[in-house]
Every structure is written in C-alpha cells, then in structure tokens.
Length: 264
Image 1 (cartoon, helix red, strand yellow):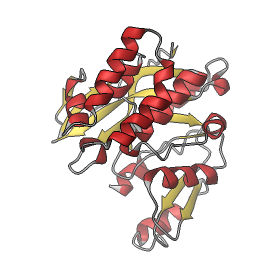
Image 2 (image 1 turned 90 degrees about the vertical axis):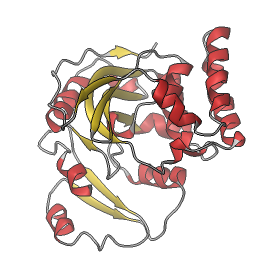
Image 3 (image 1 turned 45 degrees about the horizontal axis):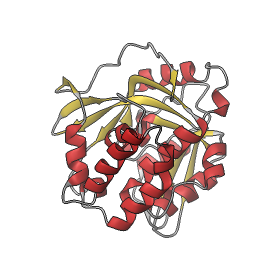
Image 4 (image 1 turned 45 degrees about the vertical axis):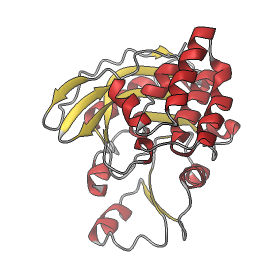
C-alpha cells in the first residue's frame, strides 16, 4: 500500500516541492528496492525516527521537520487521485489570500469493502465537523497557522484530526471544495471506530464548543459529542453521514472544476 500512496503524489507538479517519507521505530530498512527507487528522486526526502510515539507527538514532530509552508499528511494506506490532486493544487494556490487561511479542504472518497463512497462537507457547523471531518488525504495544512495553535492536541485521542481541523477552520478560515482528490481506506481496528474515553470527549468540547454560532448548534454538537463516548459511537456517526455511492472499482478522476468557497 505504501507504493500506491507514493505513486499517487503528483511530483511532476511545480507546486509540489518535496515528498517527505516518514518512518518511525528505527531505519526504513524494509523497503529494499522501493527505498532505493524513491531516494533517487530529487524531490524526495526520507525522515527516520528511532522510536514510536502516540499519534499527536508523531504528527507534531513530523510537522516540526517539514520545511515547506504547506503540507498534506498522506498515510501509507491512503492515496490520491493524482490528476485531480494536481489540478486541485493549481486551483487552490491561485485563490486570493490563500496564505492567510488555516487550511485547504478538498473532497475525498471512503474506500470500504471494495466500495467507494464520496465524502463531502454538507455543512460547516460543529455538528457537521463531527460527522464529516476531512481526512488527511484531502487536507493541505498551513504550517504557520498549525504552529500558532501548537499542532495536534494530545488530550483528545482519536479525535485529534477533528480538533485541529476544526480550530484551524474556525480561527483562520479554510478554503473548501467538494471535488474529491484523495481516497481514505476504512478498515477494522481503527481508533475512530472505538468507544472514546469521556476525558477525550470533554477535551474536544472544551476546545471547540466556543465556536458554536447559536445555542441550537451548540446543543447539536454536544449531543453528537456525548454519543462519542458510547459503544461503537463514532462508527455510527460515519453511518449517519450522507454519502453517494460512486463505484465498485477505483474511481475515475472527477471533473476538474474546483468551486472554492470560504468556511463561514
């Protein structure tokens, strides 16, 4: 799956200045020919950490090592739809004042049981964020804004992407488009499918509840967040989200029309 992820990055785009391959828990010595192939590319850099740490520390120390102003985190079991990603990056960085945004959010596909489900942001409220948090394979982070917020919080467990993406979007605005560019593989055993400790739920409530724009929005957010401490809850939230069935094979590149709007 790693090779699929690497091959999906549009390194031929002038906007993509570097591909950083991160490996934890010692040297990347299991890649063999794969490692030798990618190390020869002028845009590729291999970053090795000697130990393994929790998600928040892992992502944050990776952010610390990134030398570019914008970055996307692409797990090795996800991948991009390369032609769409290249067109999306070109369109995104042509938007006015893009460098002031907290992040750029693109559409994505869920892949589960060989079915592709199109994910998108129906609404920009807190409840919508709980259901349809964009995946790493469809988000460009503004590293300057990420560092202003201190990176991923370490007190929300598997909701760390919801916490950071929500804070960036509400604090600094986000450019968003529904056009999908990435594929997120859903699989068994994910932390997001497990019951969440109440302490994580309370930490997320403390970090994001202040962004509610009305009492009704706050109540809906609290309702969904309280459910996240129940058994199988986050999986149930995913099931509630509105998806349109796409295809039983790898999706074709979507139309390259990126109607960007601001998270409001």
